Image 1 (spheres, one colour):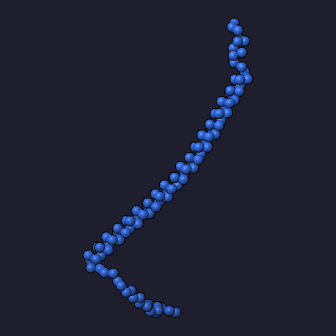
Image 2 (image 1 turned 90 degrees about the vertical axis):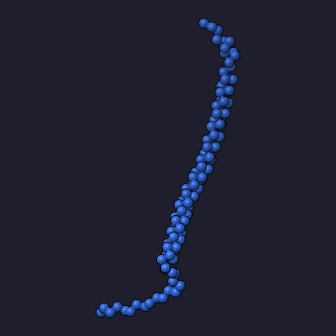
Image 3 (image 1 turned 180 degrees about the vertical axis):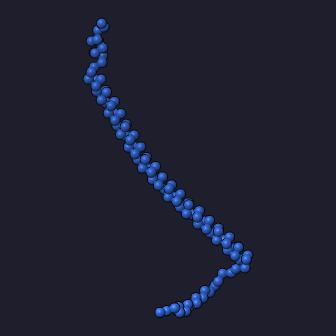
Length: 102
């Protein structure tokens, strides 16, 4: 059996435990820093997604308005071609009272 006293002298238990605790502390600090960075980036990504959804909704509304305006222009041109014109004065006729009153 080899002599293990020499190995124990080389590797001091206190030094080994000290180095282990320092390395563990460094890993814990790096984990906390990484977790914090990911969490803040997650909020930024969430904000960008919300803005994207809002812009997509605005885009849909603008497309509908563009289609309506284009359709109205086509209708206006078609009406002019067929001889219709825009009324300038609107006259309202009063309605007589009903005759079936009791």
